Image (cartoon, rainbow, N blue to C red):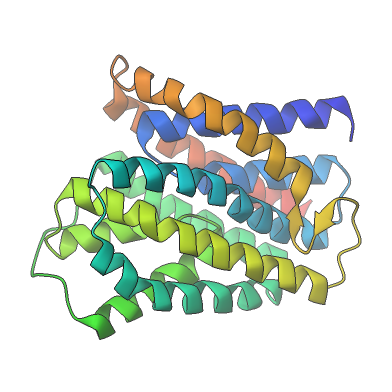
Length: 267
């Protein structure tokens, strides 16, 4: 791999880590469009760059979700009974959605990603929080919720926080517990999603060096390496920078790079 691509992945990981620590957001919103652009510059076929970006991003989330889960668990921020009830649905929904993604045209995946991230960015920009209504439902509801959250997360390659946290807030879980529980749900999403994208990549016979299914492992290693070390920097910056304003800037940035992703696929 050329030096410029190594540097690109290291810088992307560093940026993702800082933003995750600073704003409390997952990396998929940044990684998927940026990886799509990098893979295009590297000369990968347009037919696979979006799928590779989704699978590679999901594999990176395994590392970040493990770190986040451990931190929240140590602080008692995870409601484990809820996690255990949601996991079956998460695994089924996430894994099944990777098969849907594999059979979907790259342009449609890019458009869905852009529309979803535009919606998430709007919620972030106006700082809208769901209104608590009633207590958490039974096993059936949690399995269904996990399935839906997992499916959408797999299609856009996120850890599910943008969906799980609002759902738990709506069900009268306080914000600290909601974030911690969401972090715990992110690991099964990442594991099932990565496995699904690996298997589907084999089904599509992706013949690229260092690629395992729809996962480009050099990018996973390099991005995970720098994001692990830069996330604490973001946490420290959160205590000194105007986070509310930065969230609005970030929201606009995500929309811009999502549109750029669609344009890359169309090129």
